[in-house]
Amino acid sequence: MNSKVVVIGIGNLLLMDEGIGVHTINELEKHDLPESIEIYDGGTGGFKLIDLMQGAARVIFIDAVETGKAPGTVTTFSSEDVHSIYNKKKYSLHDTDLMEIIKMAELLDNPPEIDIVGIQPKIINYGTTLSKELADSMSNIINTVLMRIEEVCSTPSA
Image (cartoon, rainbow, N blue to C red):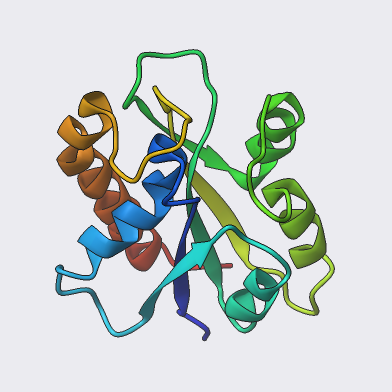
C-alpha cells in the first residue's frame, strides 16, 4: 500500500505574502515528521511539480489563495473544491497555475489525492517579509498542515 504523502509549498518569496507556502515549508522542516512524508519548496511552481508528485498517494499544496477572508485565514480544500476555487483565483504569480498542475496530475497513471491548504494573503508586493498578519498566523498555519498530515496518515486509502 502506498502511503507516501508529499507536501509542497508554493510561492514567490520576493512578493511578501505570495511566498507563504515556501515560508511554511521552511517552518515544517523544523518538525519531526513521519518517514512517509516528503516536503518540498515548490517555489513558483512549474511542471517540475509533477515530478515531485510521482508515486505519491496524496499531495498537500500550501499556497496563498484569495478567499475574501481576513488575512492569515487558513482554508483547507479537497481536490473537488479546488476546481471551483482556482477558477475564481484572481491572480496567479506562479510560472504555472496550480490548476494546470492539478489537471495534469489527474492524468498520471495513479493520480494522488490532492488537498490545498490556502492562506489568505494581505500584501502581494515586492518585499521578502510576510505581513504582520501572516507572520502572526504562522503557528496556526503549521498546526493546520500538521493536522492535515495526521488525518491523511491515519485514514486508510481505498
